Image (cartoon, rainbow, N blue to C red; front, side, top):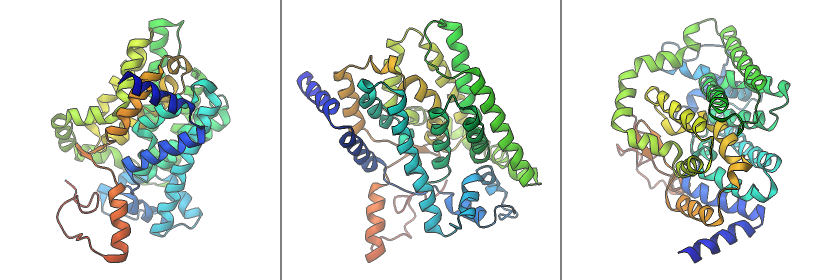
Length: 380
């Protein structure tokens, strides 16, 4: 086994960077496939008329107004058919992955870049905007641009305003985790720091998020539309808490999947380990308040894990060739799974093939009352 792991490690490290990226993407798309967010077509209705209440009395859909920016972009570009709206968010997802690869090339030492690429794809956040083609595509792209230009306060104020318009809640939680980790680093061991960001970055980002939310309040006079996400949580609270309690293992494990092994590696390797660990444990506290647990956890922890794990040379250099091989192998074998309403959801790859076949031959019976026949057809 040791010989195999060493050979696999040599292969991965010596592989041409472009070929490695292609290999990682090919495996990832097989593990996830591509499908649209269940609420994407409701967001399309906002794109058709972004300054009006298009849902009228359907208050359960008001939370979507808090993800206003990408529908507004579609409105400006006149991409208001199902296909064009889907393709817009798919292109944003592609830009996210490309921009993150450039981020790795910019911030990570060349000798650690292939390790960083593999580590990035191990975490489910790398593919969440393909599995759920929707508002996360723009959200993760804005996060990545912010990290890439973390010293440029002007770009960060623009990105943070955009995040405030796209998903204020995840933006605030992400920033809160960064702030908590930075403060804890100073408390536990101020001589070993993993966070490159400054308090100025955090302050400017917070101002931008607030401005984005204020702009939404100015766009819609009815505050119930802007607070729809909180109203939805209030109305569904018992359902959410039950899901969290009875599916605790699924929710926690699939929040990061095999990525938890890297968190354990960090815990045993780093002297100043507690800031990251405590921050990730704090994030579990919001899991009883959401329905799409993996998506929310992976997106909310994205900036924190990028700084402390994926683009941290001090950590990456501790990953030995054999360990990298083992993590890669486990990642290939074990599925990504996005826990939604407490249940792990399978890859969409087979649905992609079935959809293509069904388009020409119409052989799949979509009337069967099971979510096995087309994803998300059956809601709890």
